Length: 516
Ligand SMILES: Cc1cc2nc3c(=O)[nH]c(=O)nc-3n(C[C@H](O)[C@H](O)[C@H](O)COP(=O)(O)OP(=O)(O)OC[C@H]3O[C@@H](n4cnc5c(N)ncnc54)[C@H](O)[C@@H]3O)c2cc1C
Ligand SMILES: NC(=O)C1=CN([C@@H]2O[C@H](COP(=O)(O)OP(=O)(O)OC[C@H]3O[C@@H](n4cnc5c(N)ncnc54)[C@H](O)[C@@H]3O)[C@@H](O)[C@H]2O)C=CC1
Ligand SMILES: [Co+2]
Ligand SMILES: [K+]
Ligand SMILES: [Mg+2]
Image 1 (cartoon, rainbow, N blue to C red):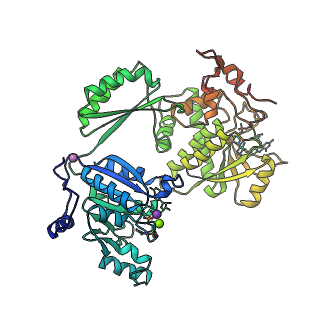
Image 2 (tube, rainbow, N blue to C red):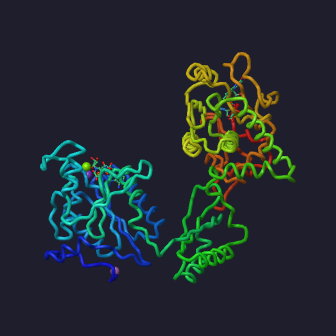
Image 3 (cartoon, protein in one colour):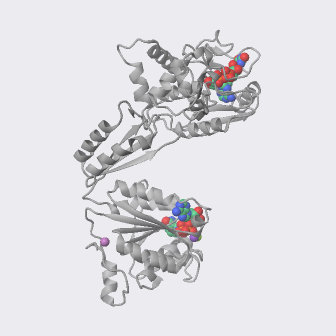
């Protein structure tokens, strides 16, 4: 039994009530938390619980270990029972939901019942709700939000932006803190009041290793290191079946930096040679640094480096010629424009580090788009914070629509290479053909070859459309595109399979999987 817990049952006497009011949790090395998510809608699958994930992340950064999350329905007795148990077990109990004005919001009553308390209108909350809603009827729905367990504590946060005190406080009874269920309200309240949970004695340090080997084949090595460090370092293993770069993510977490480093070194050395990869977790955040490391390398003069340098030079020139409102990237989810988008993002961020507006992108959906392509386009939009202009139909007609709907648009950056059909005459800056809607085509990748595209994507660990890992080396639409036969092989179980596109040796054959 933790010494910092007080028994939660049967508070009847005045002294016990006082105890409840003045209760301050003692924070020790072992600061723990339990989260109770309250709401029928979550158990019915109508709402996805995102609140517990948010709170877990925050508490972890505050040095608090969440040990349990429970999801329960809107029922006073069930809430009371769960709160009773949680408040005895954990340093902090966080509840989410059920503090609104409707009949199904009963967290205050449930928590009161857990501690044998009554609920009553709190004068301060009555005053706030009267001011806010201009309602003073104690029986109104709004006033339900002022009826809280007797002796509960109110904590008002300060909004970091406006410096104003929050309108509605956090209501707490002993170690139980009742947050709203609406994610934006819960997050705002937690950001203002997270310091209440800070464990000053502890900080968790984390690190990770990315391994390109099946989990089962490294399990024994992981277990060996985990056992050796079991008192100081927590090691986790998380397989990823779709990642293009690694198969297993190993995590390490400790309160002690030195132990963490030792365990990491040992874990690293216990992995088969060459299987721990240098994985970039945040390729977008590191875009400027990593792209310009290649560009600014004083000695490198190999063809790949030259390709990157020239592309960046072309994009920097485009950025001088056009306002950001006049230029967009032509993005269809293919590998070339994935490279081009990343370079463009780096070039813009390098010149305007504080630019936080969306970059413009044009996506013309083909007649039979691959769902994997659609998904990747969406993910890229979020990753690079793009303003997507999208149309369905033929490219030429859609460009005409673009000219009408976005008359300020002057240029489109494209991932075209000279080896693409009918592209050998293009230059870095070429207007569209005379019979096409007039736009400047900016082509930074003209001289790039197939292998340079893959070198760039893989070296920077950029996410790319998943079809490329399944043998597609050039993407058109679903009715004319197949995996490249050159990547075909028979796997160890005798099944026909395809190697990933980056292993295609002969780049001139990249379109072998496409009809026409
Ligand atoms: C902005 C623009 C201007 C064009 N101008 C001309 C022209 O003047 N004369 C002419 O004959 N043809 C023009 N085309 C058509 C082009 O030459 C290709 O036929 C077309 O891009 C498809 O070729 P691909 O299958 O090789 O695609 P890709 O190799 O995938 O296309 C090359 C690049 O074009 C862009 N792009 C391609 N498809 C789309 C799409 N659906 N949505 C958004 N961006 C896309 C991407 O940046 C991509 O990297 C233009 C296309 C675009 C998008
Ligand atoms: N401004 C404030 O800080 C406060 C406002 N209120 C008022 O109370 C009402 C809301 O009270 P709640 O306790 O939030 O009501 P609630 O429990 O009914 O939840 C409201 C909505 O939040 C979503 N939600 C709930 N739990 C979630 C979870 N775990 N993950 C993701 N989404 C989840 C659901 O869609 C649900 O419909 C509103 O009318 C609000 O104005 C109440 C307390 C504080
Ligand atoms: Co205990
Ligand atoms: K509810
Ligand atoms: Mg409600």
